Length: 264
Length: 261
Image 1 (cartoon, each protein chain N blue to C red):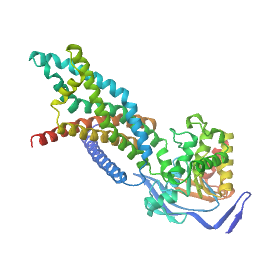
Image 2 (cartoon, each protein chain N blue to C red; image 1 turned 135 degrees about the horizontal axis):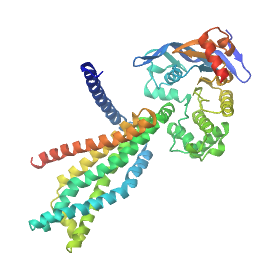
Image 3 (cartoon, chains in turn orange, yellow; image 1 turned 60 degrees about the vertical axis):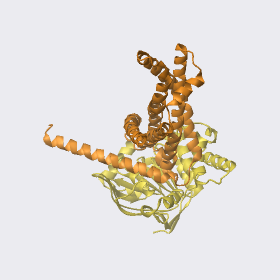
Image 4 (cartoon, rainbow over the protein chains, first blue to last red; image 1 turned 135 degrees about the vertical axis):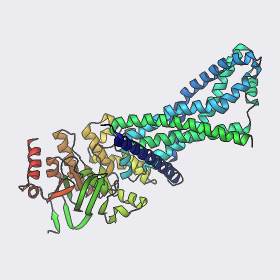
C-alpha cells in the first residue's frame, strides 16, 4: 500500500542515501590527495595509463575535433555573411574552439571513453575480488589503481584538449580555404588574434579539472561497484553520466570565475 | 593435551598458536554474522572450517587478514593484534599470510608470469629480474603448472586457476595459509588434486592453514581438526570422527547431505 508513511520513508531514505553518498565521495577525494604525495609513486603505471588514456583516444579525438571545426565553420558563415563580416570568421572560430568547444568536446568524449573504461575495469576487479587480492598481498590498491589513473587523466586530458583544438581549427581552415583562398598561417594568426593569456590559462585549468573529474568519478564508481556483472555495467554507466553532469556544472562555474577575472 | 603431534607428513606444535581469536562478533547492518567465535590455530596445523553457505566462514578469514573489521573481539595473528595495526604494520603482517580466494581472483589483464611476479616486485623492489623469474618458476613447479607460464587467466581451467592462485600466495613464502572454498565448483578429480596440493603446501612450506569449505571430503582430507560452524558460532571443534560422532541433528544432517552428494 503506497501511503503517506511509505512516501515519507522513501523520501528520508533517499535523502539519507544522497548525503551518505556525498560524504563517501568526499572521503574518496580526500584519500586521493592523502595518497598522492605518499611513496611509492608507481610512475611506470602512471605512464602506462597515460598511454591508455591518451594514445588510444587520439583517433576519436582527431575525427571529432576535425568534424566540429568543419561543422561550426559551415554553420557560422551564413550569419556572418548577412552582416558582411566573413573576415571575422577565423577569430570567431578561434574564440569558440579554444575557449569552449575544444576542451568541452574532449572532456565529453573522454568521459564516455575513458570514464566508462575506468569504471568498468575497476568495477570488474572489485566484484571478482582482484582488489582484495591486491590488499592481502600487501599492495595498496587505492594507490596502485586509483591514484595512477586519476593522475593519468589529469595530465593527459589537457594535452588531448589542446590537440583537439588545433585539429578543429585545421578542419575549419580547410572549409574556409575551400570558399576563399587563405594560407594556413594567416588563418591561425587570425584565429589567435583575439585570444589572450587568460583564455589559454582558463582553457588549460578547466581541462585539468575535467581530467581530474573523469578519473576520480570513474574510479569512485568502479571501486564501489557491487552486485556482480550487473554492478559493473551500472558502475560504467554511472561513471559516464555523473562525469558529464559534473563537467557541465564545472564549465558554468569556470566561465563565470574567468569572467570575474577578465573584468576585474 | 599433547604438546607435539607428528602426523604422517608434518609436525604440529600445540604449544605455539599462530592465530588466536576470542569473543569475535561481526554484523552487517541488522544481520548478525559472527556471534562470539573463539578459535585457535596451532603452528603446523590445518583446521578445516566446515559449514553451510552464509554461516560466516569467509567473513571469519577476512577478519583474520584485516580485510574486515570485527565489531567486538580480539584477533591475534602471529603475535599481532590485527585490529590495532597501522596500515604499514598490517601490510607487513599480510606478507606472512597467504590468502587463496574462492574464485582465485587472478588479475585478468596479466598473464600467469605477471600475476605471480606482481606481489613480489611490488613488495621487494630490489629484486633483480632473474631472481623474480627463478621465484616464479619455483612456485609454478610446486603447483605443477610451469608450462602455463605465458598463458592468460582466461585460457586456464577452473582447477588450474585455483593452483595459480595458490602459487601467487606461495611466492611470498607465507607462514599461514587461508583457503576460501578451495574445491568449490571443481569436479571430484580436480578437487582431489587441490586437496593433495593443500597437503603438499603444508609439508613443503611448513605452513599452518585455515581451510574454509562446505565439502566434507576436503575437510576430512586436509584438516587435522574440523571446526563445524552454524549460524555464526562453532558448534563442534575436534578431529573429524569426534565432530561427527554426535546425535546433534544439525551436524548429522550436514554429514548425511554431503554423504548422499
